[in-house]
Length: 136
Image (cartoon, rainbow, N blue to C red; front, side, top):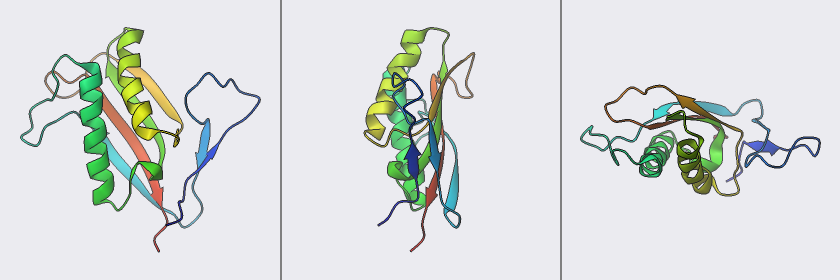
């Protein structure tokens, strides 16, 4: 299956960031706007309470499930926003590393943000994403 997403890099921007700086999807691609993937278990309880990496892993798992329901997977993601309920860079880094590892060489443009609070009890991480697919 051919992919809709093209990642764009520039040799005029720092290569320190672990993601492409832009991405495109062609006209005619079906865009998928995902709700924030939360670290919730099927019963609605929050997974990995107190564990940034554990919650990021559960959020990635839930993101994969939502993508699959829409006929897509992580390689179809155009960009992400990773929200972490912390003002400490090491906490943001712990969550980011899990997300970054999950995406592998499909290093989509991403924003990592520390926020004051997220919506569910004990929630520390949420991942927003947009994907694009070509319907065959």
